[in-house]
Structures are given as structure tokens and as C-alpha cells.
Length: 387
Image (cartoon, rainbow, N blue to C red):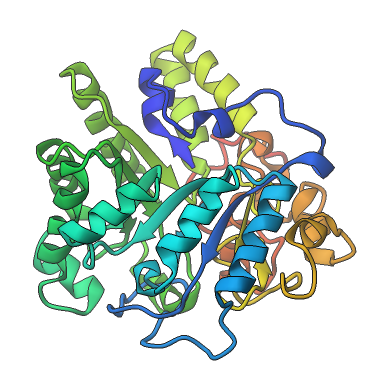
């Protein structure tokens, strides 16, 4: 994640202690944020769903007892945050029991939902079990969002879910995946964030996995991506200068950080040095290092986009034992990838700031985990490419 609001406005967000700490422990002591895709069931059919969620769970889904054992292992391992995702996590009948259990184990809990099931009563349950944040996906306004969700009326029910959460003082984070079909909606999303008093908004770059693998041709080209990121930066600063600061992040493309740093080097060198220090502390993409994922069956993945590759299952081994086992070639490579990277990534002068970006996107396009990330929009001259 790239915190635009932190880099440009010095606005510190709740997750910044994890995102920009300058004192990380040795690799074998680092503990990841864990995304738990706790169900594959969903009441919607989003066209870009990375988990290809459907209308039912497989029979082998982790039951309540198994889930609690898994959560207890996360706590023993020192995992700081668990993000309950899906599918639609609110379709798990034991979701609130499990969230409360995780919080009792000392883990910060976050809910990632499409928002359409958050009635006033559900919002109260979300508050009562202590979710620190509710992430709600919107990929446009009105019909545009409904087209992505494949369901008429999804926007209005999600908006009501947002309002129900905010009315109870819950911290809401809006999430939008940027594509050619909806990038023009971003100004309206900023207007919505301001109007509804949403505290946080995340703009995700498209990742070509799950049902999103069919949308690779619906991704922005490099010049469009730069223009969209410029817009996000401008709107973030505008909100801050008008006394309405919001936490604004971009996700899944660490080229954003380098691009912003290079831009500020010309416009505001003093600010650029602060940004550089923050990006160095962040370290770029951390799949397999400081972020991981577990699916509804208990399979452990490098992050939520690696559903097609598992390092082991929490039914047979503790999560921590799986996470620290570098006998797996991919796990070993992700934890120390710089010498394995190819193409422009291998030669980039800002590799320490990006860490090779998304390996799963390189694999999707080139069939090679260590190929360059095709979504990097920086020019050869900008990255001081070494021939």
C-alpha cells in the first residue's frame, strides 16, 4: 500500500506503524498481516473478483472449531492484524463469534465486505465485536457499481450499509478497483467520501487473477495510470487544505511511490527526501513477507491473489511453521527476491522502494514469477535503467 495522504500531507493513519516502521526485525521474526478469505460464498458476482466467489462453500471449509484453532495459532505467532474477507464474510454464520475470539486473542480485526448486507442490526453487531475498520467495496456510483457487481441495486444497499456503519461511529474504508470501465468515476468517489464523511479510501490497481484474469485488456495503459494517480494526489491534497483530511491509499502498484518521489524531487526537494525515507521504511511489495493469506479451506498463500499456489494447510501445520518454512522455492524466493528478478525490475535503480512490485501479475502476463511487472508505468529514464 502507498499512503498518499501520509506521503503528501504527513497525515498519519492507524496502519502506519506497520507500514512505515523503520525498525523491522530480522526476516525470520517478521509477522505478517493475514487476509483470511473465510468463505467463498457471496451474494454478488463481481466481474473482477480475485477469489472467483460463488453461491456456496466447499464442504471442506474450516468449521468454527478449526477456525478458532487457526486464529489462536496466529495470535501465538504474533500476527498483528487479521482481515476477514471472502467471498462475503457476513455470510459466515459464525463471523461475529470468530471476530470476537480474534480480538480476545489480541489481534486487531478488520472486515472486508461488499456492504450490501449491513443493516442497522448488522452494523451494531460489527461495532459490538470490535472491528477496527469496515472496508466496503464500491467500483463506481449507481449503475456503474451495479455493473461490476452484476446486481441491480447493489450500489444503494452498499451505500446504506456505509451510512449504517458511520452512524455508529465505525471507521469505514471505501475500496475501488481501477479499470478502463470505471476510472472516470474516481472524482465522484472522492465527492462521496467527502459528503458521507468516510475516513479512508483505497484505490486498487487491477490484478489479473480469479475473474479479474479476464479483464487484463480492461486495465489502464501507462499514461492513463499516471494521470489517474496525479488526480488521486491532487484530490487528497485538496481535501487536506480545506480542513477535511482523509486517509487515501493506492494498492498493488508500488510504482506509485517511486513516481511520486521523482515528481517531488523537481517540485519540492525537501518533501521528496521525507517521502524517500518513508518509502525506504515501507520496503515495497511484501507478499510472502509482511502480508499473507489463508483461504476458506485453510490453505496458506503469499497474499490474497496467490489462491492458485499454497505453501501448506493450517489443518496439518501451524500457520507460523508454514510461514517460516523456506524449503518451498516460491516462499524462499519471495522473501529474498531481488537476485531473482528479470527484465526492467532487475535493473531498476529504485528496486529497494518497490521490491519488484507484484510477482503474481508478472506471472499472469509472462508466465514467469520473476519477470518484470507489466503494470510498472515508469519510463526507462525515470528508473535510470542500467543497460
